[in-house]
Length: 245
Length: 252
Image (cartoon, rainbow over all chains, first blue to last red):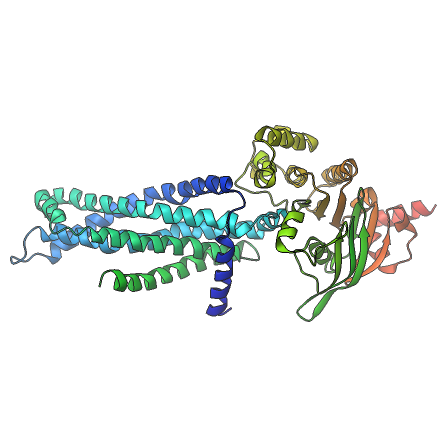
């Protein structure tokens, strides 16, 4: 199947997904479940990764800014901007594409091969709308929360490592406050909304069209992660050009 | 009653159903039998509307589903219950939630009425004690019974069963067969069962349609099957020693 066929089939699926729900109450119920499953359950990994990356970025910035001509607060400033601009949106979303994307693709793929999707269709349920819409809405609405959370925890990681003596905590705090541009946060949140949509919809697409057996669900899951990661990277360039440059 | 009239279905260059006509009567368990690859699953899926036929009519009490609009087809689907080969229960829901799901999606009744209906259906299939369990926590036979409860919860007019006994031991198979037949008669449902289980044929075959290489080769019931001269049918039904002996005994 070539790329144009994939795009066409993806568009057809999305047309079904964004139809009016048959029961709004069920959509609400599913939405809350998805927010919990895709978002709240990802908080642990977001905290762990962000705190360690924040600490490592701080250490690397100390090494790279060891210059008598540069003020000490530069370390905090560059750590903050790296986290705000790139890590907490793009890199975090790439990680979530792995965790959440594979989860969605394998869940829907398993439903496909065990005839659960056929059962929905025979009942007269719009299966893409019932299964995929809550996932997309859940992911798009929870991902900015995860991004903001990651920003705070990443900066906290840098602050904690400053107590090891590599940099004065006071200078680090001064750096993270210096020349703060709130638009960077907005930029990151806008990017994350797009990435959240890509992660949930691309993974759902690969899961929905899975066929065969358990091995094929695994393949669908891998394809979902690889392709959503590539789309995220391409979108990152495009959105940065549109929003920042 | 469901009537299929001169239906033809091809996949790429291969014609799987060749001008099949049959009538599936209400209040009876109508069996579609045939060897693997004979086209019986395609016939069932075409009758439900999962596959679009190339030619012919499929009439649900006079309504030709090949000509229905999407909205009319969705409305008709609410009158259809289906039991899948692998049960197809939703993993993330308990047995009770699975049975309640069609009501939540389509019924305009009150919550109390839903609960009463769910309770009735679970009791009817003998699963009221397993209501709070997940599909992974119950046996294959119980999964099939839960799937029957889900299929009948909206009080369907038409019930389709795809290989209902697949993977079940003979005793559990008999229970499932009897349950399907009882429900069909109690509610005057048009039931179509796709099977190659000869125990089912002998047990619940009110009407039997034998498909051979995409064509309807024989039609009858569980009693007339013994008198059939159809070679292909006899090769399938009386393939095992047990059924050969049953036939000899029947002749005596």
